[in-house]
Length: 96
Image 1 (cartoon, rainbow, N blue to C red):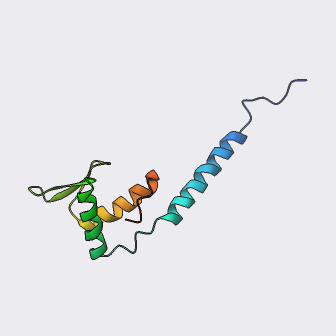
Image 2 (cartoon, rainbow, N blue to C red; image 1 turned 45 degrees about the vertical axis):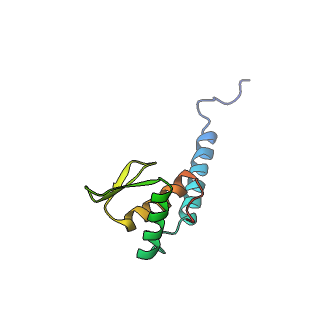
Image 3 (cartoon, helix red, strand yellow; image 1 turned 60 degrees about the vertical axis):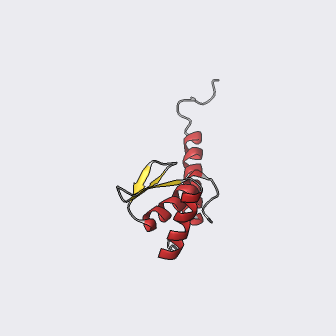
C-alpha cells in the first residue's frame, strides 16, 4: 500500500508560515521607535554620518542612508527608519 500523496502534504507550508509569523512578532517586539525625540535623532544621525552609514547632500538638503540607498529630508525620519532597518536586517545596531 502506497503512503500518503506527497503533493497533498501541507505540513511544511504550515511550518514555514508559523516561522514567518514568529519572526514578525519578534521583530515587532524588538524595535521601539516611539522613544526617538529630536535630540536622540540628531545624535544618531551624527553618529551615522561619522560611521559613513549616512551621507549628507547639502545642495539637495537630504541625508542618504547608504545601506538602503534611501534619501531623507528629516533627521527624525532617518533615525526611525535606521532603527527599523537595522532590526529588520539583524545588524544589532538598533541601540546606537
